[in-house]
Image (cartoon, rainbow, N blue to C red; front, side):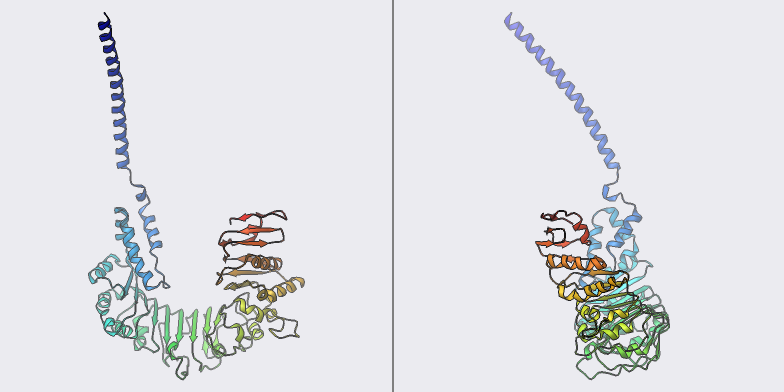
Length: 508
């Protein structure tokens, strides 16, 4: 009987195991079915990376691959590499890039990496009818410059779509091999030219009014101003850097061209590295000019020649030479609203009193810290006078100080001027400290300056690079800055601090 009972017990155990396994099998089959269904749903759904609408994706790509005329040749080549990388993310991204002609509108020819001619033709087809930005850059010798002609010949077929032409950082030989190819082209859509002229006037520019009738912006570097120089009547922005490579030869006589496009200009920038302006007073009428920037040893001559009733923004800087700068044109520019002189080498050569009388109507002035003493010290830098040059600017509302240098002594004249202004009951002036300094500053000096300025003005700080670890004292106590940068509003830092004898880390 014992053996029979054991056999029956074993059978019962096996049957129980069978039922358990069968139940597990049913559950597993149900789970398998559910998982297959879930996988099918995932397969049907679009990948997360492809869920953005095509229109939005195209717009984002255009922002990522944006063209900027300040980019270096290497950065311009980076646009093509970035476009290739994005196209490899997914099939949708690739299709969007291939089907968006705006993403193929930037043509870059550089000796560092000339594109395959066949690929250049493909890029032109993909760009369809959109305007093109043509950039030619990279130094080479004459023989290498000739090799770029086949690529330019390919682009000739689309000359009517050229929107921007930038030729920079090229050798003299390269330039002279490019210009003959451009001669005779009908550049009906060309709106902007930026070119290094290598110290000469190039005959190709004679035909600009006919070749580029829609031209709006012309920027010529190292340019020799010819007696006859004309462009399209549509030109609004002109930037000329005259004779950069002529500094070691006798200065040429620089007369304004007879056929200069003066009636449509709204922005004019003149840079001369030589002396020798030959301008008659009030001989250059610029009725629409809004922005005028001059960098010269003798700006007074050209300022006396210009008549610009709508001029609102004036910028000035000088090459590093030992000339005294004067602005003695009377009240000719008292309607100008903004004046910028952020060159640190200018302050020693500038007559602050004459400057402020000339631009007495300005509302905003941008200066380097070195100019503070010249403009805000009573009598300029002389003694015995109670008024500072800046007192002539009775409409002044904003002061921006570029290239920060927080040595407190530099700001003493400004603090004293603001203090006196407040004591006389005059409106508060907005003071902005802008751009990073050349080296990290001490927090104690910065906070001391901040306290002094914010008492008598509306103060803003754009960017400050701090020492790795500094202790800063304020009226409320001491706090410790560990971060390498300080936030825009120091009052925001200070609002987190309380108590006279504490130490706290500021994480702005």
